[in-house]
Figure 1 (cartoon, rainbow, N blue to C red):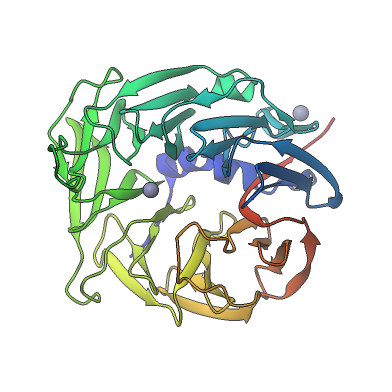
Figure 2: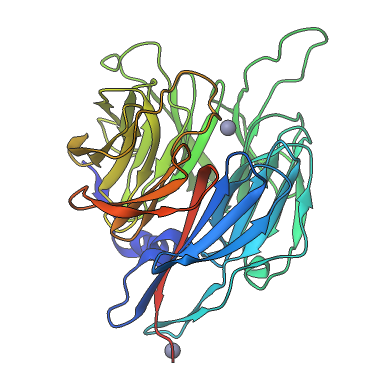
Length: 405
Ligand code: ZN
Ligand code: ZN
C-alpha cells in the first residue's frame, strides 16, 4: 500500500523544492518560466509561459542539460562534453512570510562564475546542497544552495577513490557516494560496485552496500533509491547510521531487465523507474509488493512525475503517444498522439522530445519541429505550441506561486 505522507515526513516534503515551487497559492500569482537547451547550438532560450513571444537567450559552451535548483532560484546548465557547468539566475525568488510567500520576479540572467571540471554529469539537489559528479575527475563538487540563490558560487570538493559515472547525495548527516572498483591495467572497466556512506571529507562511515552497476538515483519520503543489476537499493537514515536495503527484482517481472533511471514523488512515498526499454515500474520502498510493472505499447522516450498530483505521471513512447500514468493502479489511464514518431533506434543523445510539468500542463520539446508543445494534463488535449526554433531538447521549468506586495 502506498503511503501518503503525514506529520513530520509530510512537513519535510512540503518544504522540498519541487513541492514548494509548484504549490498553488490561492489569490497569489503563479509564474512558469521555461528554459530550453538546444540540441545542436550552444544556447539556452527562456520565456514565461504567459508571454512566450518574449525571449531571453543565453550562450553556453556546449549542449546543456538543465536543472532548476536552489528552490527554483537558479538553473544549472550541465555540459558534460564541454566539461563545464554554467548557472543562470532564474529571476524568480520566493520569500517566506510565514503564512504566505512572496514572489519576486526579475529577468533571468547568466551568473558570472562557472564550474569547470572533467565530465560533469549527474546532479543531485537535496537539502540545500547541490552535488555534481565529475565523472572523469574522481570527485563531486558540492554547491551551497542558499549561496547560489543569492547569485554566489560556493563549492567544495568531495573526493571519491576512483573516478566513475556516478553520483553523490546527502542523507542524514552523511554523504552517500556510488563506488567503482580500481581499474585494472589493460582490462575493460568493471561494473560499479554499490553505494557507501562517507563523511563530508570522504572518509568511509560504513560498509559498502552492493548495487552492481549502480545508476539512477532519486529521493522520496524518507528514502533514497538507486537502480542496480540485482534490484533497487534503498537507503534511509537510522539510529546507527544509514540503513541500506536491497529490493530484488521479483520473479514475476520480465527477466533480463533492470532499473537505471528513477524519479521520486514529492507528496507520496513512491518511486517511478524504467524497466526494460518498453516498461516502467512503480516502486514502494517500504511495503510489499515493492515492484509493480507497467507495460508500454512502444519503447519509452521520456517520463515525468506530476508534482501537483503525486499519484500521477506521464510517459512519451516512440510512436509519439503521451500516456498518463496512475501510480496507485500501476497502469496507464489515458493516451493521446502528441508528436510524430521518434524512434528509439540510435544513440541515447539523439534529438528526441523531453517532458516537463508546468502546473496543469505537460510541456514537450519537439526538436524536429522546433517547437515546445503544451498538453493539458487532465484531458491530454493539445493547448497549442510555442515556436522556439533550432532543435529544442532539454527543458527545465521554474514554477512559483506567491503574492507580490
Ligand atoms: Zn508578504
Ligand atoms: Zn548516468
